[in-house]
Image 1 (cartoon, helix red, strand yellow):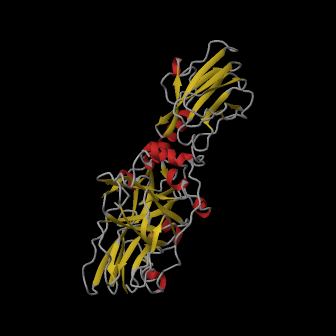
Image 2 (cartoon, rainbow, N blue to C red):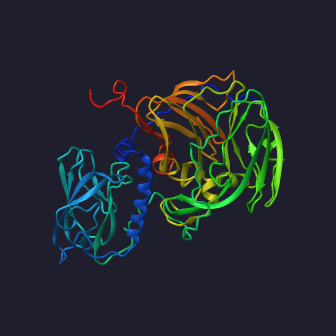
Image 3 (tube, rainbow, N blue to C red):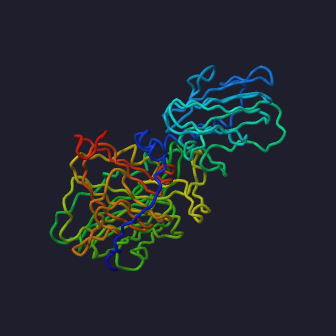
Length: 505
Ligand SMILES: [Cu+2]
């Protein structure tokens, strides 16, 4: 195996900074809240949608058909980003209030811009749309005759605003002529399967803490290092209360970070506590299968092999038992760091983050126990893309740092399919070892913004922190971050540095 340097490794990512992203992150404080809240609120919306419509529940329907009715909806920042807030009458003060009219009513919806952000009201499926309200204080009205009974979504149709929370329900009561305008459920993906209820978890948290990094090696000579990995199949929460059956090393995703020194002999034992055959392929190994040939381990058995760590760098390890992709997709991976002989420069903080996709059978936001969905894996269409095993792993337990400190992140991408565009919002990587290759001849990339990390690889980024606040780790294939879970936070405390970053001119 040769050293894994690949050109510059710097990715010039051209992207449109969607209003949504900026809005969500600024407004939400940090984007995980957005992601999680979005999932939760979608769940609630789905549940709401499934319930029978109760006439006049919130926005009261007038007593007789053919009446003139008016609703006022204000635009507001809050919740998951944006929302509609009812003004006047029964809907006053309610977020995304249910609106109810009778078939034949002449309905007027007045939109009042109260947040200073451009919005446009639309009732999906009725062809009802307001003009945009662009500035704070603007109002626009749209009047229509509610001639088709049914339940409809009203939304803001600016891209991303519906997903950010501007979504409510309008019911037109009356006899339905056909089923042509049934509302689409407001989740990101439509449920196509029925899920069992969430299962009882067998581990309290699947996520491995990002701070769970072995100490730097101070030895000046090679040694023999014994590593024991236990393969365990566990049930844990993957997103909110929904559960998933994970296959793991040592009960977490990722498995433990292994840290050895260039020239060390590693004696590695795989002890299989699961019900499937498991094994290990470490990309740091020179030898067939990276160890997988020697470690095919049946349930209840153990295998051991040894290898000499010749090439310094950070490398992915993963299970390589048939069917290999399924074992990776279910969570069997981690990183091994082979420190160079001369060691690594001292930093104040080191973090361990591994991205992985989860091909859950249900839809995002669908509550239940999600089996693995092979068809989605073949189509490379994950429901969740996460850091360290589950949605929220690195935002429930944020990484901590202080202004003035230096940080090193060991970042792996297990895939199994997608290339990560690893980026930290609010930081610039002072140094990047693009494919994680270390050693005297390694030439780090400098001043990098977004790093392509292929499936089956790792990278090392280093940076110094200048100002306090939240630094947000993302896969900058940004739908994966905002909507599918690939978000983490480094919460930085310390003194403001107004010469570097401050409000105002
Ligand atoms: Cu396995």
